[in-house]
Image (tube, rainbow, N blue to C red; front, side):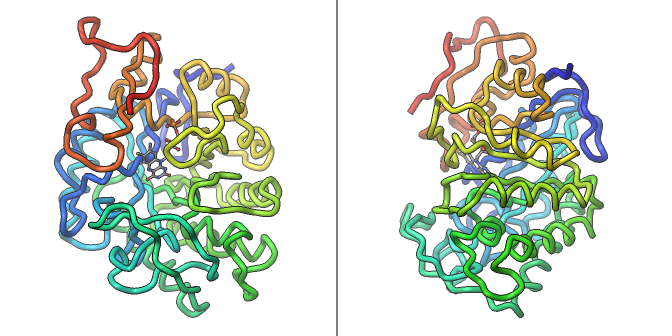
Length: 375
Ligand SMILES: Cc1cc2nc3c(=O)[nH]c(=O)nc-3n(C[C@H](O)[C@H](O)[C@H](O)COP(=O)(O)O)c2cc1C
């Protein structure tokens, strides 16, 4: 039976444990220009471990792909050194690091997209927010992508993947979750197109296929992962039949032989737990459709992570919030040490405080008996 600390081959890499850093946008790039900051390199370096995998926060592939002021992006040369420093910081401790590539689609605002309307598969009003210099503000009205524009967006994904490659990363993860552009194409609540990219699920996965193929053209399939969030509610997304839709998505991705499928459980909405008492359900129904490694994410602690790996429904577990405040999370889980509570107030922007200043475990450092949340 597999355990959290049984080695696992994930695509091209053999990991020595299965505790993965989940991607977390922390809005700590240097402005203007979304320059990756030294404190970001500290953050990822601190969380690196021999044979462990980290997935770096959502990285926008272009200006029109941006959603949040301060969030990461990679589309100009001035960002290269910062990203290299992050990859080097992880490698210095023997870890592996994938970059999550994102296009925000309709979850944006003209101030973030360079003055142009955000794009989406279809015009379906979105009640959510984007983050600009004025704070969280209602998203701008979006427009539907013309079919002739789609290859250009796919090409932006390819170019960003090449940049990640050249900066020394170990792979890329396509952000197909949380109601951003790829997810907007997959789910029928946001995809009302009547052309080759809309209608039946075979058409709604066309954009996913094309972006995955673009990433594979740079990296090879064994260095590409994909993240999905079946029945997730972040980003006002919905589908009339999530189980059928995402089972199909998993089968399609299985056909490419990608490194892993990364699944957010629907008990989580973005950065928060919606349904504390819900067990993991998505990985269970997706497992028969995907033969490669599955990373489960969303609401796990050490015990429930062990349980899902032992059950075989998932092979690895990604941790977000607990990893934010426990840089040595794999070590703490291995030795069943107490966890430091995370600090929600520092999630979305700020400086080093409650970001890159959490210490590794020490019996003399004050830690909470129970894990929990500090607002
Ligand atoms: C501050 C914050 C930022 C996040 N940013 C991203 C992101 O950039 N990309 C992504 O796929 N998920 C993002 N998430 C979701 C996490 O990856 C993860 O799915 C979520 O925190 C649930 O896992 P947990 O219960 O272990 O925290 C974010 C979560 C938090 C708390």
